[in-house]
Image (tube, rainbow, N blue to C red; front, top):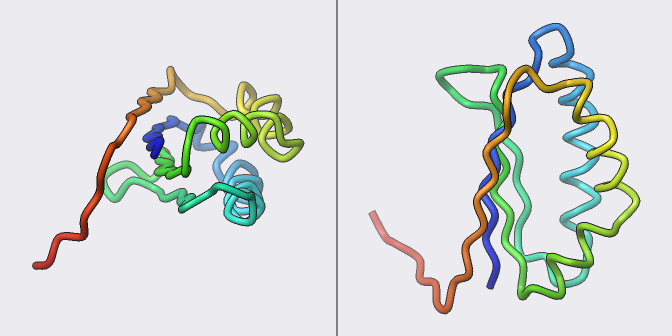
Length: 101
């Protein structure tokens, strides 16, 4: 499994525009083959930071996602919305289990 955690600082003046596109991106991405989960959230301490948590079955699913029209359109628009450098981390995970509280 491939897990991606990405954080994007969004220009406050572009926040609503960016969130509209991010909602569409997340919805379309969740419908992709090989996508286990795709979530975008705003940070509770800084509402201008959007965080993505993405889980893919494998590297092929991740590669396919990066070639979709909705993702490439997002990347094109992203540079207009950013207020700083994004942080993107990718993890390869061999196993996963749910944690009970």
